[in-house]
Amino acid sequence: MRRKTLFQIAEIANGLVDPILAKRAGINTMLLGSWEDIAGPEFADCTKPEKIVWQRRASEGQADGGFEPGTLVVACEGARALFLSHQLGEFIDRINGFFGFPAVQRIKIVQKPVVSMNRPKRRALPLPQDKAQHLSRMLGDIEDDRLKAALEKLGRAVMTQKKHG
View 1 (tube, rainbow, N blue to C red):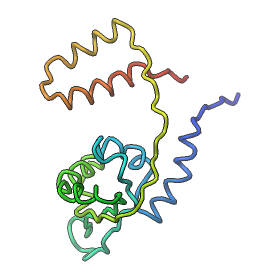
View 2 (view 1 turned 30 degrees about the vertical axis):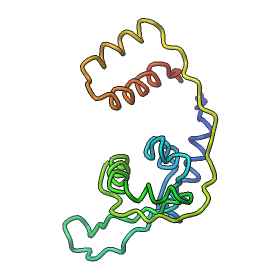
View 3 (view 1 turned 90 degrees about the vertical axis):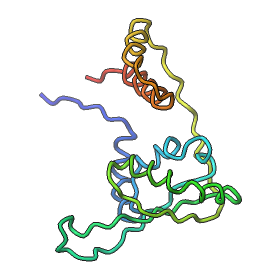
View 4 (view 1 turned 45 degrees about the vertical axis):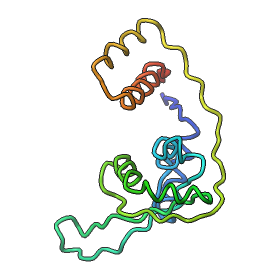
């Protein structure tokens, strides 16, 4: 008996689009989809990653296979590019944190209009009282407000996720 497997359309689309993006631009849909969180509220609306330019391998004989971090090309609108240029170190840290390794060593800013990727925000599903209290207890000892807020957002998303079976 064949078992039907359910897929979200986004999974199928990402599976088709990611290889093309990786080949042409060196980026993936996860980076594009997470850009708002990476860029933060100050730059999410005026920037967009365009591509990562990877260096040619200097030497295949090196212990790390000759990997060289790339240059991320970011489109940025007008005068906001100046403000972005002052925060490039932090931006590089956020991007490398997203990848989990030092993937980017430089950011090249290209001034041009950025098409807003304003998509409707998903309304957070209400969390049952017992789960909300459990999440609050788990996060109680975290002192950093930004980290606590991010973990709470993640916890709510995980705890309200529908089970697919």
